[in-house]
Image 1 (cartoon, rainbow, N blue to C red):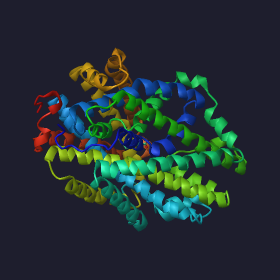
Image 2: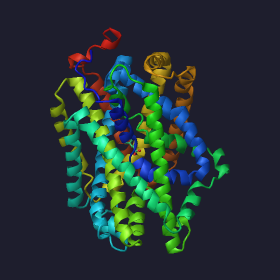
Image 3: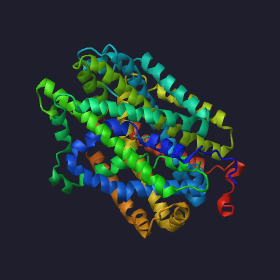
Image 4: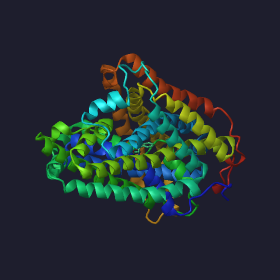
Length: 504
Ligand code: PHE
């Protein structure tokens, strides 16, 4: 019996949706820079170590939890251990904040997509982006004007997210991913091929991949690898458990985890090649070193790349349009996964109808996101993104590993996934969940705290990191604790029928 829980149309649909969540801005604008900064080709060692000792094992953990307990993250965790229900709500509350800036970035990308046809960003891309387009104020507390085009884009993006989740798991999310993911891969392949055939591309690729083995002794390099893998696989955000709860009883969990991780990984490499080939071209055409043009994140996408596209002639418009639409597509599938993680949790808790939940959620979300359509939006994005990555994702991941490793006991999940998977995972998995992942995450947490105490993130005033950073982390935990004290109103959440026992 499935208590009427929705289901994917096929296993492929589930994998595409999971990969769709994993593949996002992190692949396109974060990974290439992380590789470059952390020893180039040598970074592949810690990266693959992180994939095998954290990425895939935690993916199996989350898939296993969602599948065994057949619930969104809070419900699955509550069924595993009632006292820890709050841990399931923390990522759900945090997802709201991620959504608020994710929708803003996608709104920018849509606008830049339209600008790319006539290279409407002009010759000074930096001034255009920060002054003309964003009207950036001089401090995170100064909101300045409403930026109407950004607001419009945000509303449109929320509208799309609403439509997809309104349509449900199979009719909305699965369909979206079936269309967008293959399209996205096609686009990135075109960008990568055009990129490597540009003059100077090899310069960029050499810079990216030449290994600097000495960096392997630097703990920061290892921390970056684990951080990238966690972020990129959308772990500890409530998504993967929710998605796997829509799988049929008989399905292959272990295999799905490997496929998701490898697909995401392949996509990351493709992006890195495309981005650095283009940076190599830019450096060559300006007669400077690659080091001088390299950047990541917002600066790469909205300042450096537009400049490259302007220097390219007709191909610039084509590559520009493809690049910005790829950001929109990649981001949209991640955004939808966040909306679904929240939606599923609310439905499980309250028993309300999906359509009502999605509508209410999107109205609230769009309203909160509107704050970002002001002159302070970029600051808010920067601070929130940093705190969510450094503390919320790492904190949730750590507690998840401790909960399953030490309290629930890993063999419960291991036996469950082994029963239904083609190849089995051994005791090594228990060891990873109990010791390896928690150790790495504790080191990451301590490292972030130390540097934060030395000086507030990004050189912002302490008040700004308190209000937009720490307060959001604290808010997430407090709201999670409050929600977990409320009873489960949804009747079908009362029992976990798989094991034939009533758990809560
Ligand atoms: N995995 C996404 C990426 O690589 C980022 C993300 C993390 C999205 C958590 C949603 C939730 O860009």
